[in-house]
Length: 471
Image 1 (cartoon, rainbow, N blue to C red):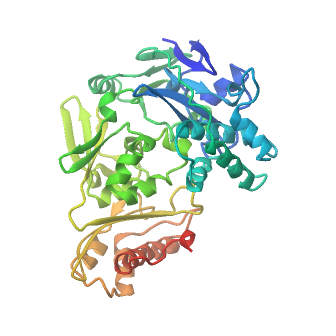
Image 2 (image 1 turned 135 degrees about the vertical axis):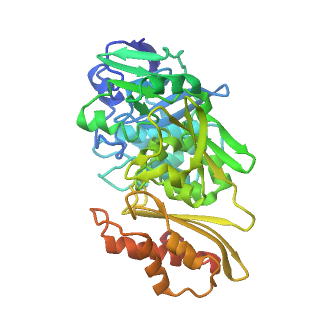
Image 3 (image 1 turned 180 degrees about the vertical axis):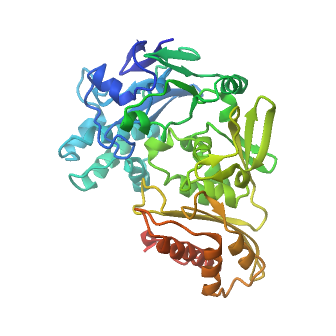
């Protein structure tokens, strides 16, 4: 079946391009749309930003994505808009006009991506109150401009969102089907969980594609495709989200962007952390299940899942089974997932009365960076003692792990006065981190211990300033 989508208002079908070709390569080589630029080819710089339209609840929704790591099969049944599709017969689009009038451009290489990010922001805010500077900064965090400062760009964003243009409809074509085959590749797109499990059982060696924020680097950087792949993006059961008893259930295909509001309401610290996972472009693509499935030792969500004692649902031919995330992660990028199983959902227990969740990420830059280390803590302080304590860290071992020696040291202990040497010794018993280009082992040990001290300040001295931004 051909891939069908709307590109800058024109419905097109593509039957002669590999499904794992990147959207950026398709735009450049097949459509000669070169306004969308290639900078990093790994989803960081935002020069390749495009807007993707969909229909949700009868209303149009426009989100940004990095076309350099987005696969062609992922836009089947969507509307795609590039910078060339904004201007009309009457002239430039308002976002282009306001950027030009605010002197928000320099060399212009990064400008098309900035234009598309501001376009999506304006569409999101059409008819609403003006956005805050924090909203603007978050929307632009995925677009790196090295020519100048961001002041004129932010000025343009303020002017645009103060009087945003009318919302534009998304003209979404019907999806092509469940099989996309071209150029020696076969991408299977099941619609139900039972179909997904059946395909996974039939093709256990197929690549599973969720958001492709990790896998997309292979065609983008190595120029290699995926001859056989199975996508999870249309399986409705994998997008369920909500409370089931005392557990918040997040389907494996729920994206960070779609799950943010729900997660933030239940666990504010987790929501704040999600806002630092990549950029908006990444968060509209990346999924909670995909982050767990990659089992990266620096996967941002994993320490939080461990600290919450979360469970994972695994679906296979024999049905659905559950296990603790701590048991699911077995080694460096290794899990307990069987060859004929898929991750169906995550189950996050509700915090008990008096419990709080804290999560802090340390990285070389605040936005869009991989964790040097990440600490997550679930605590309950009662009567000056640590009545309940769970701690998990990423970036400290071959996988994200709980810290049993630290937990044993602090659980039930007086919380007003902690011996520093006790923390250091417990951390040394729990972890033996490696040195790499992000940090030395000694730094990781010291910084992880300092996160425990930060936790002490946060829970014993309410209102104390812990962020440089707060100063």
